[in-house]
Length: 174
Image 1 (tube, rainbow, N blue to C red):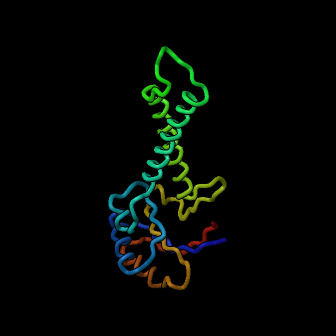
Image 2: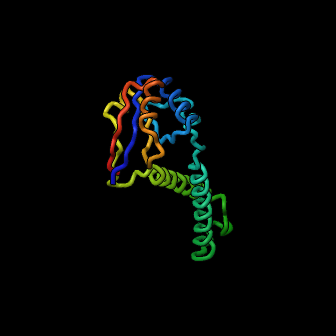
Image 3: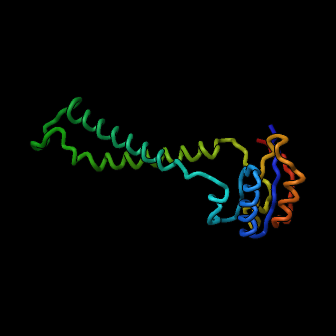
């Protein structure tokens, strides 16, 4: 399945940032922005929401903590109670290092998994390469042509006025 994109290439980050703001103000749906480095303020200009990834990390860490404490309680008190040095069976202070490690492990693994799922970085997935220099020394603003709602001649003219040195239409295999 092919998807059609309109890609505007820019030489400077300020021109790209201005183009993103202007295109969004005029009602164009911005698919993505490619840059060789992070640009301060691009998230706000694109209208992106704050990431929900920290919530996934917290939830998975909390589940890891609960599972670690429950497993250690079950093994020490229910399944195999052994009197070690007269200590109580449910000595939770002794369980904290293991519980901490499991909390960090599940939090980290779930964060990586959620990132890969959200970014659609599955094994065998194809990268969308719009231009070989996009991650080297140029910036790109990508508009997806989903239907006839994108007026291509107007978008091309507007991108050119906003400082794009090249505007091209691409078909990318998804």
